[in-house]
Image (cartoon, rainbow, N blue to C red; front, side, top):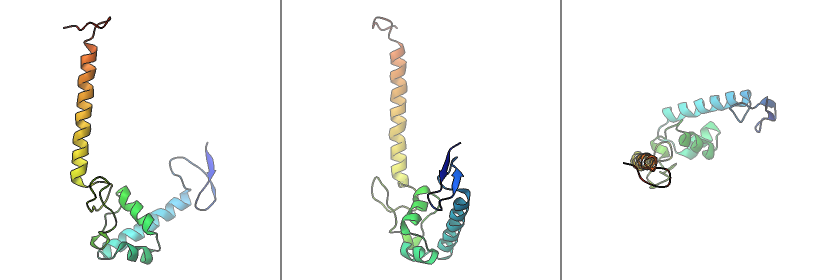
Length: 131
């Protein structure tokens, strides 16, 4: 059992999957819901306006967006960009085009690795190829 102090409130808790205690997790979920509803009701607000209205840091707001929990509204278009190409995005880390490109590259690498593994199995002991 891994017992630690919550980094937010200082309470002792058993660290399972969450880095903060249950009470702080509940407060975090409530704050997120407040932010989500505010953004939904006020789609033209900037990140700074959301931050001030909901009493949350812009950094925390950006964290919600990067996690994919919150999609930015029209007024928060300045908030995040694709980490690969720099285009503005609404959530996550990369735009759809870069995700597809990266996926394609990774699929190619996996296919080549599988092909190389098959070729390696054809090598007989002593380094001779079998047919």
